[in-house]
Image (spheres, helix red, strand yellow):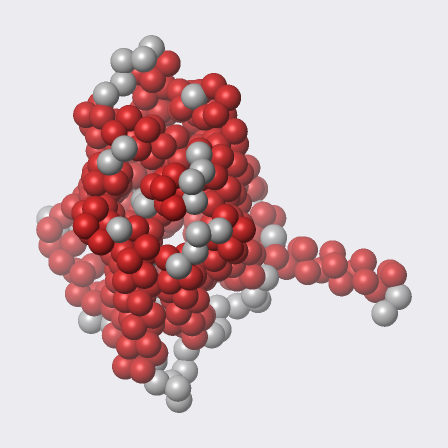
Length: 416
């Protein structure tokens, strides 16, 4: 193959991987969200480090994680119904404005040295409520931003790549800034970063089709969405496996500040490296999915991805080396991203448009809504069993869940 053919093939691969960016509205959203998410990940790292620095309590780390995600479990199903009824574009503008207010409030309290743990808990609950409305609206809004519906899977994968690319950058920057100037600046940067995504949303040209008013109550529509999703064995199995990994596996992230400090004998920069490695692995997984032409075979990825994720956590539980830990966290990030993005893409490409918001809300409950229970469980168990054994147990449960999913819900002869 000569140089011109190599260049041509590289350009074709690039265009295929980033094809959803040809849509103007999605391109605006992608650029604005990219800037905002860097700040979001900076804040997440800064909050966890601030709580552990102030309290030296693994339990409180788990509690703050629980409080920030619990509203998703309660509110998201109703937010999904609301999202199917209302203008998603307008919902997103308001969720971003409120998120900016939350971040700037946190920054003001820290920079004036008046922050307390209870204020962090209240503000974490507030952002959790905002996210409960934001996630169903944002995920179901993707299809409204792209011009070719065939690019939906690519747009979701690129969204995941952006989410985890910023997970690589945000913690890295936060680790440096926390050491240099403290956590408050991280919160300030996050607050200001919301200007980018708000500007992007305001710059979009969305043709809003007014939905036909239904003579049904919110509870009736919620029940309709529930039976629609959980009567489908494929959708149900994907959501149940996602719920298992959210309870038993993903909460390992909540323990990372304590793991960095107590197991690896490091500081905030160590935590930043670990979270950046997690984001790098997840970003690689997302780009792998973005390069796929269609969604065929996505269900085959899911149990294998969970198995890889579980192996990464088990290995991490046995590690006392920063270098090895970074590799294992990278592996875990790759696995969990393949699971989340494959599940999200398959579900969105197999759902009726008028039930998309509700389906996404159930996905949010299984992915984000179950995580707070896992965070609280991990924080409580780690107090008695220690961090390594807690991680090991979670990894084993993920592997067993992947095996059950494969054997019972996806026989080798079944099609995807």
